[in-house]
Length: 111
Image 1 (cartoon, rainbow, N blue to C red):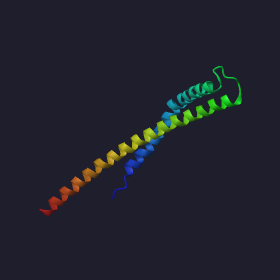
Image 2 (image 1 turned 90 degrees about the vertical axis):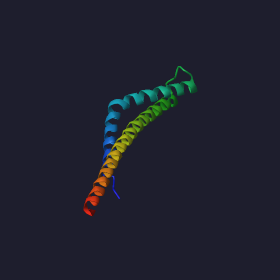
Image 3 (image 1 turned 30 degrees about the vertical axis):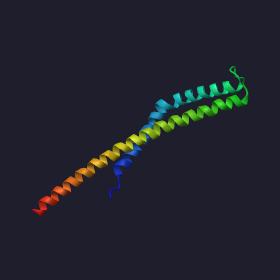
């Protein structure tokens, strides 16, 4: 049974690429979107001109952190899955080539 080394390498490469993409393109938008959701949530709970109380600030802060976490999850998990799928496809192609090669060699040796 094959160990699928290329699929594992693809997973690690995809995770690394996802971290880089998240740092470049996902951190700030995740914070912005989470903050807007938090402002809307706190505004609906406490009224739209938000006062500088602790609870509305905590709601906005927690929603910003959740926005960052969701953005990171999407970037890292998405690219990891893509990398794993590419590695798995490469392993499958290699397995088919090895099967065809060994089958042809067995036919030649039998004759």
